[in-house]
Every structure is written in structure tokens, then in C-alpha cells.
Image 1: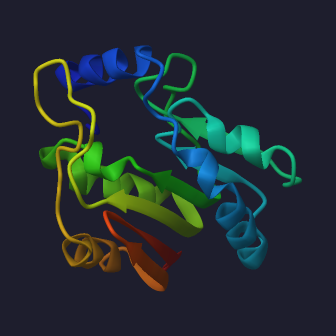
Image 2: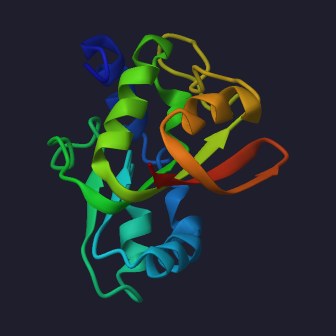
Length: 170
């Protein structure tokens, strides 16, 4: 199980507001560069939100971009594997008790590499039940230990409040 039914409803409610799940488009260029570097023939946007990564990538990549988000109707079917899996501004929203299962799912789906973007500070948005939308607020090294168990680190960079991790399949 990757998400509880109760939390899925809270996520659907947040997405219905229209101002949630919008950050992926800014990662289009890094995703396209990494896809070229690893010879990707398909990209999966895991936790795609409103689908801005696919919209941006459609202009300059010659292969399919698949989308998965359990809280978006039509994008909620379990995804197929892809050479590159992008997961941006998603992992900090995962219920802590399901994090290991989600990371294992990402590892299963990524045939060649992952690009993970994680916020390390509280979100500006809150769930309908009052909790901060970022259920997991931990420093980069906390995340890095979990990622390094599953992938070979290829690139890491951090800024104030978030970091990205590129991992290659082991």
C-alpha cells in the first residue's frame, strides 16, 4: 500500500483547489538533459500533479512522458516502468508509514535513473485536517541515507529549503 484511503481524499481535496501540484515544470530542462545522458526512451513523472512537466517536455523530447498521481483522476492507475523516473515535490508529502514502500516502488519503476526533488522545510499549504502539507520535514542527509540504499548517487545539489538527488539504478 502506497497511500491510505483517508490521506488520498485529503490529497484529492488539495488538488481540487487548482494551486497544488504545480512545481514540476521548472524541472523540464534538467529532466531532458538527464534523459539524454542516460539514453532514456521514456520518462515517468511520479506524483505528476497537474502535469506541467509533461507539458514542458513535450516540446523537446522525442519519447513518451508518462504520468502517475494517485490523487488525479485519469492519472491514478499504477504506472509502468520507465528509464527515468522524476519525483519532484512529492516525497515530503508521503505518509511517514508508507515512505519505504513508495521508495521501493520508485526503485522498481526506474530502470536506469531517478531524479528526486525534496523540500526540507514546512509547506505553505495545509491539509483540510489542519496538518502541514509536508508530512515529512527532514534534512537532506536523512533522505540521502534512504536513497543511497536504493540507488548509486550520480548528482546532488541543495538550496535553501530543498535538494535534488540523481540516482542510478544499482
